[in-house]
Amino acid sequence: MSVDTRKAARETLIERVHVELQRSLPTAIDAFAAHLVAGKSAACAVLFYGSTLRTGDLESLLDYYVIVDDLTAWHGQRIAAIANGWLPPNVSFETFDHEGRTLRAKVAVLSRDQFERGMQTASIDTTLWARFAQPIGLPWTRDEASKRRIESIIADAIGTAAHWAALLGPEQAEPAAFWSALFRHTYSAELRVEGAAGRSKSIIEHERARYEALLPLAWRSVGIDYTVRAGVRAGVRAGVHSDELSPRLSTQQREQGQRAWNLRKRLGKPLNMARILKASFTFHNGADYIAWKVERHSGYKLELSDWQRRHPLLAAPLVLVKLKRAKVL
Image (tube, rainbow, N blue to C red; front, top):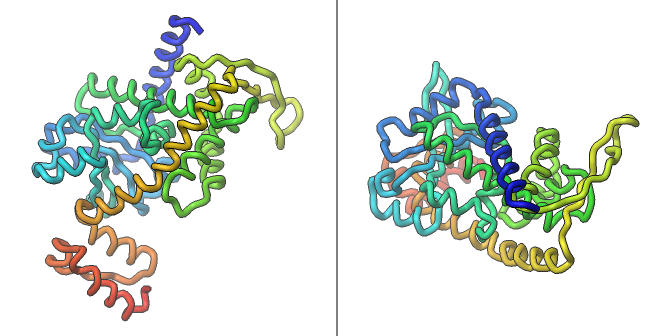
C-alpha cells in the first residue's frame, strides 16, 4: 500500500473523528465538564464516554477523562502527580448540581503525553485505545489546537484497534465480526464482571454502521491491505448486502500478532489489579463514591464522618460492621 494511500486514509479518518466529536451532548454534560476544569490552566480537554453517551441516563454514574498538560500543576500535590505518572490514571468521584439535579461522575486524569502513548500499537496497556476507539464525546477543549490534537490521538486509537482486529479476528468476515472479536479479546484481558461476548456484541450493535464504515478506512490508514467480497448478512431480509473483508496478512504476521497479544493478555489483569490497589490510596472522594454506590443499589444511606472521608482505609472495618448491622452486606 502506497504512502499516499495511507496518508489520504489517515486524513479522512481524522475528519470522521472530527465530525463524531461534534455530536450534541446534554447541556448538563457540557456544564459538568466546564465545572471540572474551572480555574485549571493545565487542562486541555475533557472527554466523555460510557453508557450514558448511549442512554442519556443522567442518574447513572457519568464518566469523564480530563487531559492535562502538566500533572503536578493539575493535582497541586507532588505525590499525587508521581502516582499518576507511575500508574495512570488517577481517579476521583465528583458531584455537580445542575438545574436542581445532582450529577455524579467518575473522573480520570491523564497527561496529554500519557494519553497519546496509550493509543499506540506498541502500548502494553490495551484499555485506553480500546475505550477511545468507541464513540465518545468532547464536551470541552481549551482551544482549537488542543481539539485538533485530540482528534489526531483518537484517530490513532481507532487505527490501533483496527490493527489488532485484523490480527485477532477471522480471516474473512463482515466488519462487525472483526470488531466483536477485538472487544472480546480486550474485555477478556481486563478485570470485568460482565461477560466479554455479551458486552462486545452490545457495543457493536449500538452503532453497527459506524464500525462497518471505520474498519476499511482504519486499515488503510495503518497500511493493512485487504480484499472485499460481497456477502449477505445473516438474519436480515434477502437483498441486504454487507461486504466481507479479508486482511492480507501472512501466517507469520498472524503468529507474531498472537504472541504479542498473549503478552498483553498476561499483563492485563495484574495491571488492572495494580490500579485498584493504587486507587485505594489515591481515589479522591472514594468514600463518598462507595456511599453513593451503597445507597443506589440498596437504598441504605451511609452517613460518613469527615474523619472517615479523610481516612477511608482506616475507617473501612467500622464501615463494614455498620453495613452488616444494617443487613446491606
